[in-house]
Amino acid sequence: MRISVLSLCVFSLLAAPSFGRIVPLSSAPYARRSQVVEREVEVELPGDVGRSPLHNRVTRHIRPFADEVPQLQRRDDVDNGAINRTDNPQPIRGPKGATFLHESNKAIDRQNADYLSVPPTDNGVIPNLKWSFSLSKTRLLKGGWVREQVVTDLPTSTLVAAAEQRLAPYAYRELHWHRVAEWAFVLKGTVRITGNDEDDRNYVADVQEGDLWSFPQGVPHSLQAGPEGAEYLLVFDDGNFDASGTTFMVDDWIAHTPRDVLAANFGFQDASAFNNVPASDPYIVPATSWPSLDEAKQAVSSNPGGEVDTPYHYALSKKDPTPAPGGGGWTKITDYRDFPASKTLASALVHVEPGALRELHWHKEAEWGYIVKGKGRATAFAGGATARTFDLQAGDTWVFPTNYGHYIQNVGDEPLEFLEIFRGAGFGSQVRFNDFSLTQWLALNPPEVAARNLNVSIDTIKQLKKQKQTIVAGVNKSK
Ligand SMILES: *[C@@H]1O[C@H](CO)[C@@H](O)[C@H](O)[C@H]1NC(C)=O
Ligand SMILES: *[C@@H]1O[C@H](CO)[C@@H](O)[C@H](O)[C@H]1NC(C)=O
Image 1 (cartoon, helix red, strand yellow):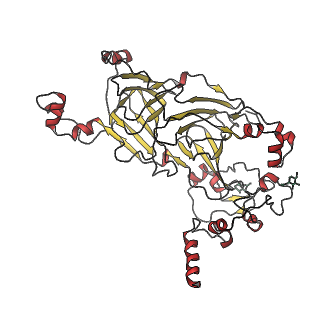
Image 2: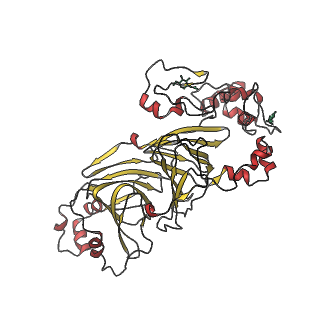
Image 3: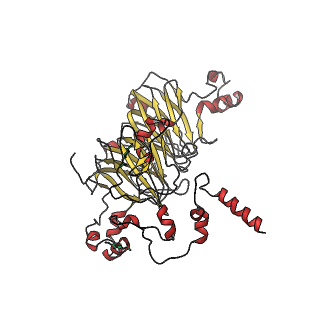
């Protein structure tokens, strides 16, 4: 009997998520879980003279034992948690760590200073939440390219996938439709979109830089770049975008239909008109002509069904930005309330001035994000005393799973702009932009509540703003 109990222990040690690291048995996750008991008070760290009581606090239900506490990384007296930027980053923070003895990928290290010189407030194991489009394989095509971020690239992003796409001047993204909804933000150039809905109506529009389009699931559409070409971000409301049965191309279908059926379907004597349909889909089709928008609309204006009543285009570039009450930038929020074609994806374009901070907050939905420009830094707080800091720059994407606390800080010299995207919990469900602000939450309780919970003075709590700040201007406004 003893032997079998022992082997069970060994097995659970091997099966514990932290296998591969050296973890004392007393602090292995399964051991901790099995012994959790309610304790009345917070645990304080030994030897915390001169440190913030707030940062010495340990989550009671998760780490109830004083003997575990010394293993936690804690704030050093002199370490304010700021990014440790150097040209030759090393795995060093304060008295901890040591230089690389062997090679390291310096370019990646420099972009991810917070992975190497980890702020002491980071703790525990949080899976990767970031993907850079620069790590995606680019599909090169005649007339453009595309690179994707799907669930196999970033497994934590189960609800949202995305792509960056580029079209040469006048090139088409060929006629197609998706099982999922498509939302897009034009990064550069002009894109002419066409689409039609299930109620006989059609749509043609030119979408400019900084504007959005959205095609609900099933709605067939095409894209064409204007005279300067175009580049845009595509976002889809399912992480598994490469799954079979997600994208349906027009030439692919034609090429895979018996030709007598084609002839009968289109009312032709024979199907010779389709002899040259490409057998493998070209995906992007080069072209040279660009009729005026009026001409393009005119060509389909005889449709008795008329134009769609929920436009697939939204002129975000013309929408007035909403200044952040915190004075650190502005936002442009869209969801089905002002862009009814985008029922399943809500968005916020956020502009953060140098030194400013998208305040500590959380959302009911997972947040998928994309850096349009600038340099940012974010920490995801997953509860249970775990947090992980990420460095972000143009073309980086991230996902903060539902309800994770987070902030995004502008750590560059230029304005930081990014997109926050939200999808509802259920596929196809309507979603509205929402967020909860930490500051507002604290301020909208009787001051004694937060003061006692955080062991800070009532005066401190009384200074907190009752209105969401959204983006807080830098304390040091030297810029
Ligand atoms: C920051 O990192 C460098 C090495 O990249 C190290 O020498 C320095 O001590 C670190 N600074 C702090 C405050 O840890
Ligand atoms: C609250 O803060 C004071 C110092 O201001 C400290 O003496 C006390 O131990 C703290 N209490 C808790 C429960 O952390």
